[in-house]
Length: 395
Ligand code: SF4
Image (tube, rainbow, N blue to C red; front, side, top):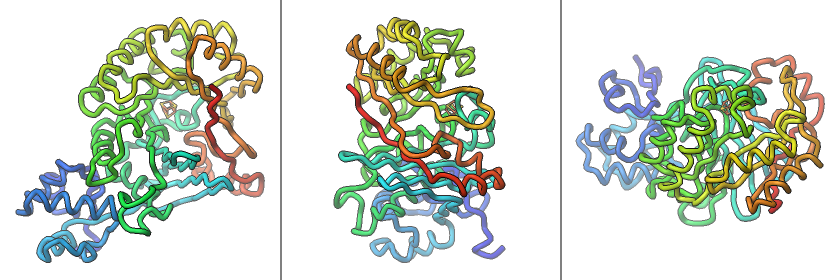
């Protein structure tokens, strides 16, 4: 088999990669795994740290350009390892700097990554799965069903490729100056805690001082409520936590977020309280998509306040983005404002995700769904241009 034809292994499994003689995708290794890989090649631990800096701080993929590595080590990397960027299937840019990429993750599947620039920060929203098994009623990704877990290399690769696209490496190492990506949120396609091993390794790379060096407060995992894995995350790598709540009672949440049937609200709230003992922030962010006539009444707001009474929290209200076949409508603006005001009266900080421009493919999973249906995509492209996402703090 020629060198080019040897497949890359991106799942961060050095033993398997070495055993099978495959080329390993270096983006798929956290510090401990990279140390083990290098040790297997007879290299000392500091070589792994050097390699990590070349890969993530400087964005270098070619071993020949890693000038402070020993020649023998560079030759080993050239023959046994690779960096395998994902193909960009589609890209949208908006006037305010919001960027959205769709990456090919193999087998005809694609995932989305969104960069949202704001005055004080730049947030990258990344995906962990192609499709999603949770099947939330209001979610375009959920309607697609589950396709596959992303590897660590594909999760980290979204950050690596976005940094390249945003010019972060042009001036040298990303640690040298202001960086476009200051925050990373695991809020794209998929349920991160149902792809736990890959998510955990990716988190460790994001936090590593030899890689992206992000603080735990600037990395957020969003979950629909996989209670046992919330506890695992607290023990393994506590970062900021967001929970997709969307309903104040079990009957409604069983419908909107089917995982609730397995982990009902009382268990979820208890897990949130336990998590806060380890969390880098002293609150949980609850996400709540506003659905006209479904979960947006005053009574719902009051029930929500009772539900979260014992959990220090913030709320992020999300206008629903319609998609074909959802059968749901976005709550009117005045209803969202009244709902937010009701929560704010109880001294809860509320943000409302603000949308501008025409409606196209900005909700989680919608762009990927469109590309799978290329005829409709072509029709839509003759229509309005991509819309913009921003976050408006209202209290
Ligand atoms: S909202 Fe999140 S957990 Fe629910 S189906 Fe969509 S991607 Fe999955």
